[in-house]
Image (cartoon, one colour):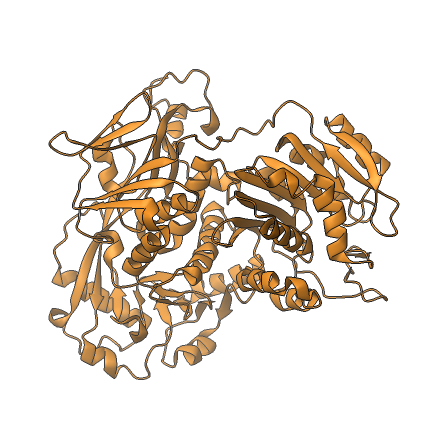
Length: 638
């Protein structure tokens, strides 16, 4: 995706915020909040229409200063609505946080809400950004970039539309027939729309798309505005409806299992969580600390885009979780060699990344930051850091509260599909639980419960711990995470971890002296000379087994029914699925980064909410992608 170009802070002669790029004001001089309430809220018959809705979805074209969102959020709070509000807005030129703060400062009545928005305001990178407010009762999904690219990637059923771009004559792309067609396909009858524009071409296009439009009195000096009601049929976008029974069985209480349990609980689901060990985070999620940083690629391919979205979402979620042990202390990813260092520099320049997300530090700047000699410069992620995975799991279950009934020391040995859903049994054949949905979050052990074999590879990883005396004596002390082929966490993490080995297909959990020696070599690559004199035999450590897919992307979604008749299925959407059986697997060594957004994606799919990522990213992690690949290669029966 092209880099996001931030909006320029500027004002018209009367002090109204103005866009030099479009030669137009952001709102009327007669009052932005009054305009939002008259045109967009009243024009869509809000709040009356959302009062009895379990979920209400608003789509806006042009986030601007965010005043329409803030006015809507304020009205939602005041109305006492019982459901959940999803507000989706696209913005090609968003404001930087400081500029947005300056623009919102005059609106004193919104100061508390504006403060919450600014606290979560994302780094201005392209793609989808999901923000949660009011204990998840209000969700804002920002689409940063060109609407013509991003709106076709949105998967949502929409109840109300705010058409609020700059004037059609100034910004025709945001009012084009193609964009209005895309938008209309997401609107379910009786969806409504409202806009201050009454341009003739706009009215005719909407009528051709099945909207019943009428002119209404405009706001302040504007004589008229436009209101529309969607006609039949229902939207062409196929999304699941909210299920009647919101109960699920989740298998596995590591990062994946606790994350999906919490995300479903936030939507009012009841969860039966089964873990064969006596506590959470006993397997791959059990290391003392993990590191948080995104994957970058010069071509910004799917994996890099997904990693960026997951990383930024994880930082927001961790900032709001009570009881978490973590620190956004910053991560320096050192280049492997001079060639890689040049590639790192070129990647940051080509992607146009904002410095609060990522920057390139040359050799001298990187060494000055760390305070020790380094082999090369590298990428600097100022918001990255370390986190205790076990504390994440505990915090997630605490946030979920009584909605999750956790069963520790209870192993699910088999699953059986019934007419109403799924049953889980122990080794003796005793029924443990039954529900309409099952989520497999038990890594490579998932295949034991399936009649199909998911392409999951176990990967053994051993981390090493610096003895306390050596860790305390490191001078100068580390204040940031450093990584390359391995990583090391600072003393503030409690246990200074470094490593780790990466042995595909190996599930042996015994500590190996050879792996400690390999981790010391990785440490010396990070901090030349740091491993000198350290006896591998004195090191502590831990072994965990991660699970990875062939393309190193996670498996998120409903599993395919490989035994079903395929017919003419040629796309993921056409493949038959095992109703109610879902996967959250293959998080590999990136579990800390992947898990929060992976869980939000799966929970959104199950609940029928707008999805938090682009549709091509959703397809990239669909667990049926390998079955479809085999079909296309003639390796599966048609």
